Picture 1 (cartoon, one colour):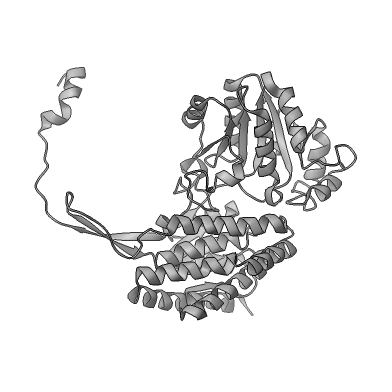
Picture 2 (picture 1 turned 180 degrees about the vertical axis):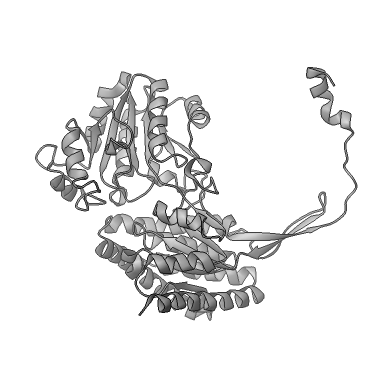
Length: 467
């Protein structure tokens, strides 16, 4: 098949989606939208299907591990369904007599979604559920390694749609093997695009001419200060760093520890499974053997990671991840960037102000806008980070990768795509969620005039500086 035929296939898929979406909206109701979303959710959450998707994802991508992918598929989807359960996304959703404005929910149309190989089932399911909840059709463009899991997920969703009598062309994917050309065509002809994954795809999304929701790179830095519960901090960092073998953009990549408790924290970290490594040069040479991340290390189980880095006999047998001491930050110091592995950079700060300065330098290099973590008993320090750093989220005393994308014990929306604001080159600073998949028509009626006198607006200003 030539390139012209490839693009014609994408055109045909989107055309089918557009026809299905118009019928879905024309015959829509809140119950219909909710049932379609529930069908997609159950398609990934049903235990035997969830396990098969997790096994297939690990087998075909070589990333992550099966138990954690099962957990991710289940909890991320369950949390999303909790978030959207009572939300109105069809018809009149608000009617304000004070303003005279009535809002009517309207779909976007056909959503084009580019999804990564790190989460080839959970991320597309999240996008599909949000799209259906708001009356849209959706066409997925998975990464080449994510194609098998995506195909199986869509098969499960279509089986649930058959039970409902719903149109299966509401949820489709770009046919055949993935390619940049086919993804580009999807970006150009969809009504809105959602991109999670490579920053190259993000840039292409924002320059496609189509309204885009794309998210920035993660490179999470977490600070541990002298007031922290060190054992709890160590356990949470370890649980987060090792979950699904660090495939999450919210996995800790750098740990900045203040001097006063540095040695004590390392003792706690060792107990939790994080081994300190002093030989930075060896790790860098093994992790980036040819200037690119070593595929034998990326998102691998601890034993494979340690073997590939030549560390199997250099650290305790129960080691879960490596904390590599370093002070370097920037392009010449790859440890200061995202590592997609059970390896974290470890920095020693003189005090909390120095920890902020170190974190700022790391974010200036990579990860601005995404999120930072803080383990501290002093809430004022969390506020200080929110004022001082280019970050959209400050995660306090939590296992970072579980908390950033929504958790049952925090108030963030459940999502696998984190907007990073202007700092990360994104149009959103929120977790991607259902509200981003809907627009509204506003009915505006005349109300009694509310025109202030000029002096009511400027009296305080004139008092300060004169008229």
